[in-house]
Length: 508
Image 1 (cartoon, rainbow, N blue to C red):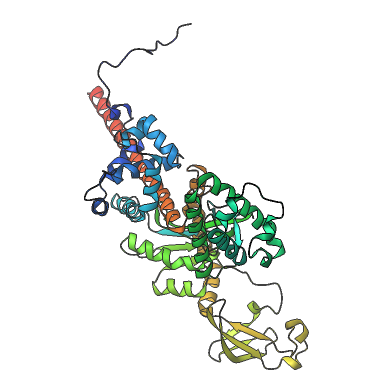
Image 2 (tube, rainbow, N blue to C red; image 1 turned 30 degrees about the horizontal axis):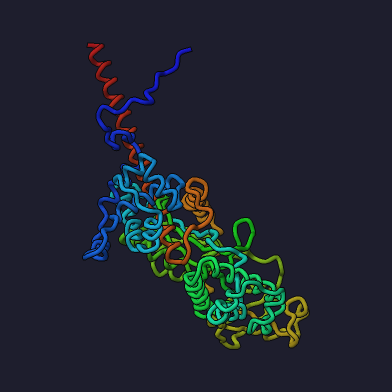
């Protein structure tokens, strides 16, 4: 059997160019040309003057975007690829940035990355690749780079901050500690019983680390606890995570509650992302307006006759009123269907002319008072029944001691009812079905093809930058695919015309 001959020890007669080793249809060529066209003047101003020269931002940005498409998101692996992988060597222009340089760039340049994403939308639009007849907005929960175990209450955080500031070095100087050393630490007796075991373990860990790393560890720990304390106070939280204080407990798709972020995207019919964001709120309700505003900014206006779908997380009266004010043909799934209980509020009919509700028994509920609800941050109207005490169905309708049924009216309730009726039509159901094809598969692509199961970075702003890089890579990959399809179509058309010419000449 013969084998193909190899040339293990033979040198190149002439050193090859890296560009000659890369296929003509490789996506890295689009990444290179796209990023080279970006405006980096803000970065130039930042690094002007004396000092050690910096890596050009386009070099780092190319590595980060290419890494997303190859599921190489770690800065260490990107730095290694810049030394070993031909594609990354080509994009980095034969430079070898350190992994810290790549990591620091991702943290420190959110504006550059955000503008690059906006330009992907502009490029796709200018190439005629966007189908803006249907848009869809959705959110998902993605795990933060934070441990569920590193959670502190207000009391625990206050105790640790006091210990680190005043006693950590003193205790760390001792060669050995007795088993009951924790009792001698000031403030330990004030802790709840459930916290003492956790705090003892934390104190011991901090003392070991201080002996190992010295004073720098204490400074870093003080900064970490300070940020956690600020987050606790500013957002009126009961507990905070010390690894990433800006992350929040959220239920995942599998039902597990863990520290996460809530990324949001708006896509058009072909799956191009036209707006994206990340928040640390578990509910999507307050994310509709930012998504619509960002899409309008990136597209330079909302297209006419667009159909825009939202899932039930965005179903809120003020959101529907906002969409109506912009004349957007919106389709929002309702959070709650009509109840099977005969005396549920959904079975009460509101008479706008009389400003009263009619119960299932045909009796009136008139306006009583308007109250501000602090939790929901809304003014709520209360309507009380007039003939409840003489009604034979009273015990089935209300459990109040006075026997009077109360119905609460929330702001924009009329708009909510109109949307519910709209979503019951067949046209609305058919339009809403497209949402899965338009937006949900993009999150699936992020998870399966780009490895976005957990965020690598910490803090809300840096996580937003990481998600913007995902969106840039996703849009550029779709542009590349569309261009390849166009080229293939042109080749087929040319081939067909050539065949026709041969037939004509043959017949002649």
